[in-house]
Amino acid sequence: MNRLRISLIIGALSVLLLSSCVSGLSITRQVPAEANLHGIQMLRVEPVKEFFFLWRPVPAWVEGSSGQMELTLPSGYYSTLSEDVSYAATRTLERAIESTDHLSVTSSRAAEAVIKSEITFMDLSERIIERSESEGSEEKSYFLVQSAAVALSIKVMEVSTGSILYTSNYADKVTKEYLVGTRMFDPTSNTYKIIRRFTFTRSPSFLPLFEEILRSFERTIARQLAPSTVTEWVNLAPNRPKDAMAKEIYHLVDRGEYRLAYHRFLGLYEDTGDWRWGYNAALLLQGIGELENAVVLMDEVYSGYPSNLVFQTLSRMRDALRDQQKAEMQICGECLEEFTLVTQMYTEGR
Image 1 (cartoon, rainbow, N blue to C red):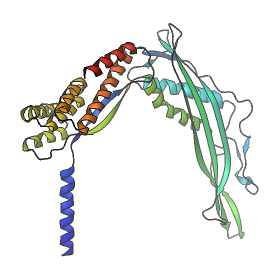
Image 2 (image 1 turned 30 degrees about the vertical axis):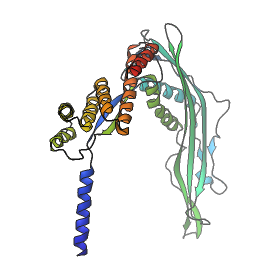
Image 3 (image 1 turned 135 degrees about the vertical axis):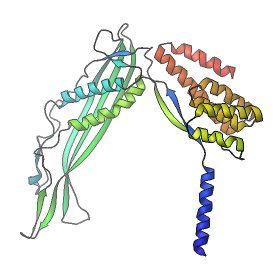
Image 4 (image 1 turned 120 degrees about the horizontal axis):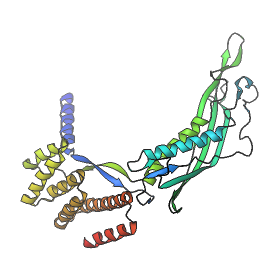
């Protein structure tokens, strides 16, 4: 009897869960860049100016504490590290630019702008630490801990005028650990011994740590210099109360047939005046890339059904439209003062 009751409860919950699922769609919108490059597309990246240490930043040897001399290693620092980090930073900038849809790198005189940059700060450290699983335990593990920190400054300058179009700074730090030894009891000698657990003959190079930090800057740099896109998931208004005519349209959305679903929802909206169908039609318009028409339709829906949901979605659409207009003007090089006037007129017209 109890098993039957549990089965019925699980079945009821499953039906409730499935009935509460809401159809939706992915919407891709444009995000304007922080920088205004006035339509410039060809950039030249000058070699990043390297950072010079006034003295050796770390000792030549990484030493364990007393009784751990068998763990001593030559340092992972080497004399040309700053130069190699500078080269890695230059490649970071080139990759960031090439990853955008609107900018490209050139080494020729065709460049419309140049990126000048420098490593403004570098720091590194390495040490051996010990850990034990429990306090007072004689068995221990020893780790080589390496840390690296770097700061990069960039400046984008227009070639024809020499004016500075954009500046930015980036900084971060990473730490990595390597197991280098363990202290274990040796029954043969009836004493504790330290056993080396590494195969390298010197500490790992710091360069991969700096490269990891620099790679983490790429996406940020790309989005700052050029418009990008972001994809979001939005839910349609649910089919509650149930409408048999709308049920098949939701299936069209689930199959990705957005344009056909838009026309069907729009027809229902015009026939019934139900806000849900107009709301869904407007979202589908945005999904197929017709954002301006989507805003107009959603505004009409809000006029007839001024709910918080419709208002918030309409506000989000208007923000997306402003971002799209700004991104398009950044790409084609129109001045942003003109963009401000256009958006003000659009807002007042609403």
